[in-house]
Image 1: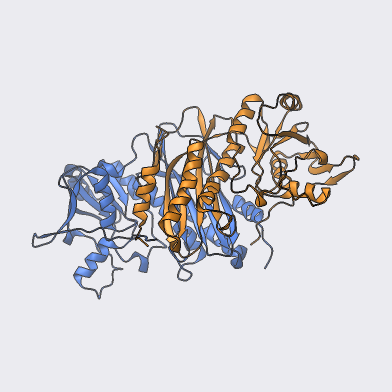
Image 2: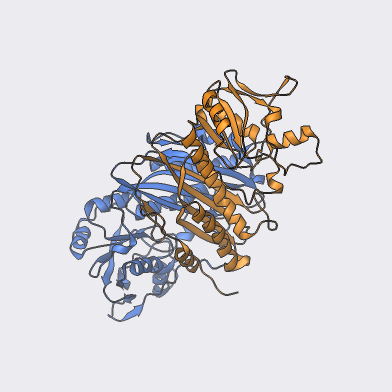
Length: 307
Length: 307
């Protein structure tokens, strides 16, 4: 294998990186320098993906692993109703896989970054004898005091979810579209009171909104949009459970006032499904209401990363 | 071992994290929200440390590994003459080592963060069967247009370095003090024209300044401050070579005008050594001048992470 050094990879990355933002001095110094936007607030998040935990080769390819590492961060920005701005990328590269592997990972990141006008602001490249680890830290912007938090849900709010849920790990967890544009369209159409992206499973992520807002929720079991990727040979109860608890859908879960909810349902401004699945209640706890009007607790059975 | 889940660790981290900055909404939503400071620019950097590559257990302990992950980022902020503000921390935790290990890593990070008024703004915790990986992304601030870049060196500038160089991996790479306060004192005393932290070795990091500034340098071989940690049984030539090429010293390497240089040398405002080691030249390339006035090329023999 050709000798390939960190500095050469950095130079290659630098040569590939567009300067899409005039307010950012990116790769090439000890830090990037960002001129803070006027009348905006900054959104900051980070996610680490590890080979064997968040993806495996195959079915993942190096570019799809890189793509996913940025996509999950873009989803965090979408969940705040923000606009992605720039990203910092750290890599732990398996030494045995060589420079082309490293470039593929970066290409997967840079292609998605270009699609969402996200500039690569800097990073850290390393190699070792371990598996691939990718960390992305993302910077986004939102209009001053207009970031959409988890804590704004109020009794009577309608609860919506985009897309369809369940079966992501068997289908699109490497290729999902972060709902950045959809979030912008939604917040331009209605006042979103609380929002989160569905990363750990609907039941689990809804619970984050309920806890932070100090409220409860009643979800209609027959309104949950079940993805076609949920195994068709399962029973209806199993399929519903998967839609409620599978992780990595990266759809948007949000609440709006009942009045805005009716308008949104009639209008649906998105090109993807948008489903009214329930209401926020003053009574704490999450419940599932069935077609026969019986209710059962909605357990947060989503992903728990035990260690 | 007690079952210990990601959400519990996050709650523990959240309970330990002070809110030192009123302009920052930290842990607890999809992203942190930062109100951009007025008349300042933001500095952004990231570093990933991997067990087996950047530290091993022993001699490292979990808290020192965490400490180092933040310290190298603080050093990047120092190298820009900035003030650290907040940090995002991602962890890949070895599942077998349990929750106390995870808390120790975080304690090492949080203690150093408190010492440098750096707020934990968010992060991502994961567990796997691999070794420990820590990624820190840091946000700093600098007065508008006053970040100190690598590209500002000019012919005639005096070159200074703080502290003493070499032998870090055998001594203080886990416990070094990032030169944040020293950088602030220096920039309040003189106009620093270019600066970098010595992470890859003096020769290698000097080359970054020279390349970015389009200049050369003449370094006095007998002026290099050699650390006491460089093996005393080596020859003088070997000891000099170590001081020039060892990585992870995290001292500051910077240039000022000759006039400011004389003032700085006479004044030394720091409580650590500050050494005038050479001059910037119009002629490109880095040279080492020996006591007999002969010169040899200064090779960038610092760390190259091959993969």
